[in-house]
Length: 312
Image (cartoon, rainbow, N blue to C red):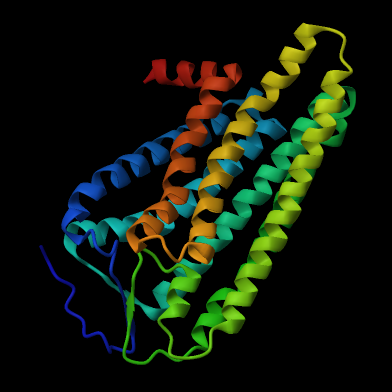
């Protein structure tokens, strides 16, 4: 194995240690990492290709699915290739600029992912509660504007994170006990005061999560009320089926994120390797499962994937 020969005090680099305590198993750990990443890339690129080629899928729901695929690709690609370099080749060094860039993209991607899930919940609300006006309320132009608002929110909220890290002094210790440059993990190796970093991260996480989960809960509360007013059991089933995929995607996205965040904040008794593995699951599991979930639950998408697959 090649070793990235750096001194711990090199001011131009940080050193990502991977998964502390499991260094001997890095090669074995890389197998599920790389497999999940490849499956996720393949599935999401298939979704993008099929929706892009098939004009009948140029609808708000599938455009949002494409946005979800793009954020999933971006988030997983921001960390997995570097993690695999650590596992396979012991290439642990990362420049300070590269580390701050990675911090920005992975946190912005997570926030953008949440914004897309909120917009999907709104899409399902309109489809079920006001179906006759669906085409006029949720036009492709309006979806684009909502996605742009989510993107601007992500950039404006996350941009201070690398700026806060860049102002901190880093003394002798340049080792980050992680597979990627997570904001607080980088801040903890500083020899300066990181109270502002901790407070800002906690505030934006709570504000964004509270806002997004409240909007999603409100949408589904109105959906459930509308479903209960339907007299036909068949209508009940059809309405709930349209929401199943979105609910599954939300669970695969928010549950790993909440586990990771809670263990990072309050799980002092949890061993570091358990926390880091949980943190990585957020960037591996949703990108892998989301296209599978929508492929299984959406007959229109599934049929078109089959059509293009048979042509190859």
